[in-house]
Structures are given as C-alpha cells and as structure tokens.
Image (tube, rainbow over the protein chains, first blue to last red):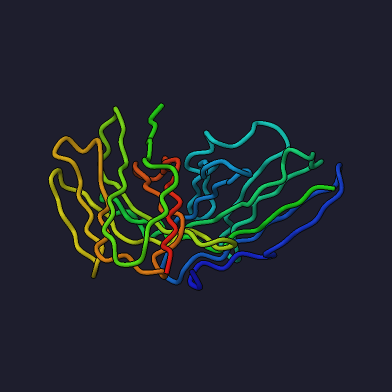
Length: 116
Length: 108
C-alpha cells in the first residue's frame, strides 16, 4: 500500500469543525477514487476524479462534502461542519489512465476520522 | 444497484486445511477484483479477473470468475496463519462495488 499515500492516518475533530483528508496517488496514476468504510460496514464509493475534474460524485453526500484533485498536489476530501456520523475510515485509491480497459485500483492505508 | 454477497461471512479453520469463499451477484460485472485487508490498513489487490470462466492462480490461491461473470470464488490450498485477514471481492469499473467480506482466521 505504500504507493498511495494518505495523510493524516488519524484525525480527530470536534463536531462543527472541518476535516481535510489528503491523498497522493501512485506515480503515473492520474485517476483518484475516494471510498468510505463505516464501522462494521463495507467500503462504499464516494467520488472519482481526474486532474482538475470530478468525473463521478454520485456516492458523495450532497452537503458538507467536497473533493478536488488539482493540477499540482494531492487530492483533497473536505468535510465541513463534521458530525458524529462522519466518523469512519476514508480510503483513497488510484489507477493509471483507463485507456478503455478496466484498470485495477490500488488503495492507500486510509485516514481514520473520529468526531468527538 | 449492484450488490455483491460474500459467503461465508466468517470462517475459522486449522492450518493446512483447504477452503473456498464465494462472491455472488445477480448483476453482470465487466471485471472482478479480489482484495485482502488487514486491520488498520487499506485493501491490497490480489487479482483481477475479466473473462467469464477465467481461472487465475497466485501461489496457493486460485481465483475463478463465473462463466456468466456474475460470481467468483477464491480457493486456498493448505491454509497458513499468514492467510488470516478480511477477503473482499469488488466489481465494476471506476465505481467499485465491494462485497460484504469474508473474515478468515487460520488457527496454527
């Protein structure tokens, strides 16, 4: 998992604060995906991005959540005004350009977000 | 909505035994991936299967994709304690749908 770097590994926030989660994809990968794993549940897709473009955000809550993947720098998942229900492990994955074929996604070790 | 059901949910066996875990869906998937996840870490990709009926081997692990591309199985021969972990199947393209997982424990 060392290829996809996520930080911080653990993040504690109080209700109402903002949480910023960062993801640097593997070298040569231009596609980034964010997933959320709630306690005792499976991984759920949130958003798929390419550089400077959101391709599919159908799994992301409509309010308080946003994601970006700028031309330079890591992808950022931002959660505003956090609530207790946002406590989860957030995983980022990356893949090379798809080129019309299915490219496997490689995951980072996640950010564990705890809301007090 | 595409769903992937994995069975069994939990499996605990003695070292040296063989086992098979299953991943089933009513939907057709263009490809299916198997991951293993350790506590506190992200899923690690084991294999991708693309063609219906495809069989792939990874040392003691054998993966099969169903002919209709709706199901898959993972067979482990002579299980070892290092095989302990959460096994996840995932299907789809960019927007992966993950299965419910099989938590495997190998007892030394």
